[in-house]
Image 1 (tube, rainbow, N blue to C red):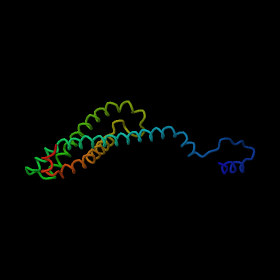
Image 2 (tube, helix red, strand yellow):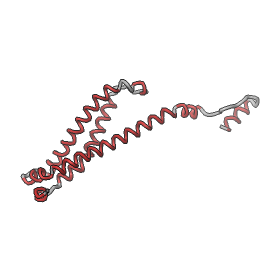
Image 3 (cartoon, rainbow, N blue to C red):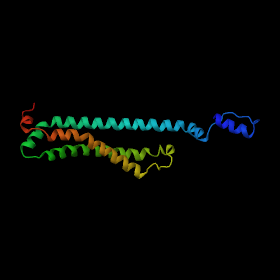
Image 4 (spheres, helix red, strand yellow):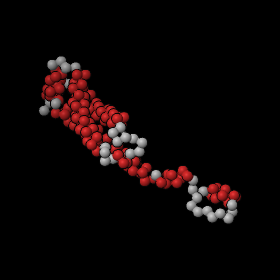
Length: 163
C-alpha cells in the first residue's frame, strides 16, 4: 500500500490519500463472509460423510459378527469366500441405496430453500446429484469392505463352535 501512495503522490502531491488498497484486497474482504460460510458448510459435510461411513462400518461389522455361525455353515456347505464377501457387500449396498434414495428425495424438496445461496449452479443440478450419489456409494462400499473381507476369512470349524 505504501508503493501505491508513493505512486499517487508522484502524480499529484496535494491529493489526499486514505484507505488505499488493491482491488483484489477489496474483493477478498467483501467475500470473506461467504468464503467462511462455504468452508464451514464443507467442513460439516465432510464430518457428516465420515460419521456416515463409520456408522455404516459399525452396522455391517456388527451384522457380520452376529451372523458368524450362519457364515460358517455357508462355508461348510461349499460357499466360496468371494460369495460371502459379495453377500456382505450387497447388504451394505442395499442399506446405502435405501439411505441415498431417501436422501435424494429430501434433497430435491429442500433444494428450493437453498436456491438463493447458490451461484452459478442450479438448485437441482443433475451433475451435483449424480456425483454426490456416486461418492456416497463409494464411501459405503469402502466402509463395507473390511467386514466383508473378515467374513470371507471365517473358518467354518471355528464358526460352528462360536458361542
